[in-house]
Image (cartoon, rainbow, N blue to C red; front, side, top):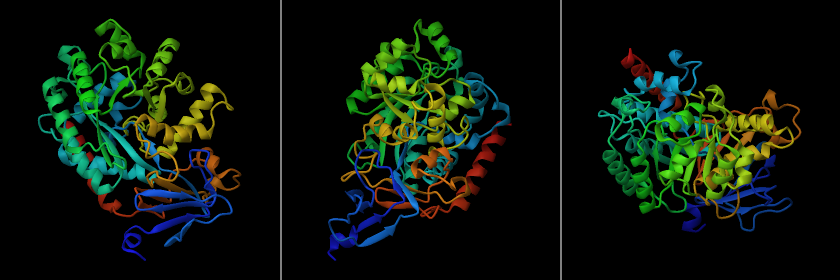
Length: 458
């Protein structure tokens, strides 16, 4: 064996029970991975073109691309099912939790980032976006901490530098203690881009800019962020059209609906993606499509907060890019992307009819759709040359017994955990267990951080 082969052996993941590639290519007899990439799809009745150094029997598994989570708030894993925040709509829910989140410290950010990424990995998710927007005088370097935490876990991440600059005294929703000056936000945003953003194929860490929402940032910050993002060619992200309350706020504060506001501040273009995107008119859906904008569908959060149902199929038909996200673990209250795909499928069927929204639609949203939204042509489906990000699920639990279509069964029967997960050619989950992480220790530290956060608010 040559030195190159020894360092990067060819691994044949062979004979899967079923394979969903996310495209029309045949990988009935598995795939071959070498280094960080997929180098071959093996069709039915065939074997790899070249000798493989390792062979992994996948005959009990469904093989698919690693799932892509396009919107999350990792820190919210520390405030799941907070009694005072239960059974509330978005605005009162936020007002209840803002004072708790104001006490976040560096250890809380580290533990919550690791816990969220571990939870996502175990659900088959290999790429995750986080939208962190709570900064204070005692927590200025949250994104730096997240970079370190993500590197330790080994997941692929897009960390968005969120921000809030419109406090209650100026007519915004968040308390003044968790807002920052526009100049500080922009300076920090540029620093993070220069230090951590890797735009290259195969990148494990990218930075995007993400002023939180129309009710928590100034229009001037939105405009200056757009200029900065264009200068560095990075994506932009924000919450938009999540609730009718937001529509009313924009009309009262800016004299226009959320989408017109987005256009006014220079954000209506293809390098932007929006979280939720629920309350759009038909004319606005058409405008979103013309702009090739991205929308992240967050079905569970939308249901928990009773925000509404995203018009997913209408957005896709208009030309918009559509991805899937678990959203924050205080409004979901989980970080499980395969379960989120099930929710998206069920909600899609409810809105569009049983035959008009399928498990394939939901899986596409959770893989290739997310890759398009994040401008990542190197991930999102299985084909030669793509990053070796993949998930293998077993269907041997009682819930799956009697299934006919194994891929459909993952969503219809409610899969909750992947058996094996690979990121960039490295196994991160094997036989349902984390490879590089002491889960017992992480859970203990995370729970301690959650208790400290709760006690700091009392």
